[in-house]
Image (spheres, rainbow, N blue to C red):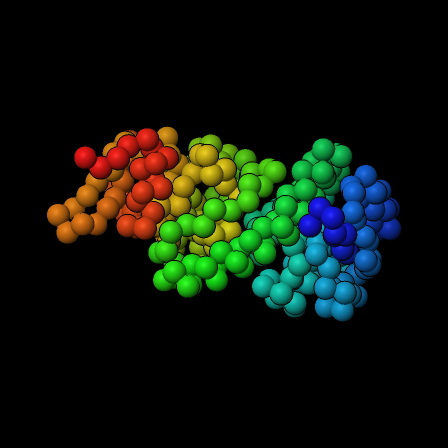
Length: 266
């Protein structure tokens, strides 16, 4: 992807806001601004017609707003989306729609660059993910050994969660482990759990693999929270965390976990 142009669409009802994004993109190599829109209806048409790699999408617009744009096109059909808005109350809804990032206006150059480069790296990872998924399928499904993935330039250090009717920014370094719960992932912090509407694979890609490891298709653990590895008489594996929590470990992922922990079976 580094030698290919990244195609971007900018959507905002304010011309100056669109220009601010365009000016910042001018500092990034290999970027083509494929189109712009100043309303949600045109945004839907342009995104469907141009099929850009990344869209900068304002949340609050008259008529069809940014969230409506995603709902109209469908989250699975959207390009990688970076929401922009002056109102932080939309953060949880943005992340519910699988936003790559959420820029709160006014944002500075460093924050913009971080969001854009994260999205750009995710474009590179998409092809890796498709290949990995095909390989896992050939090897026997989701419990097949994890496939090595390219390292993103930036890993997330915070996740927006809803708590008691408010949006909180949860530091990633506070998370003990993550479990799947239907369409949601539950982030476990001490004795509390926060639900976010995101797939486990998507979270796995965004977390630093030197800190977190997916040990089961429905479990991601923070490695420094692991106290012991357990094996039942039936041959099933688990980990016990320092707070006493026990979590399942897939047999196919056991060796990687042991390697990362620096232990081996006797």
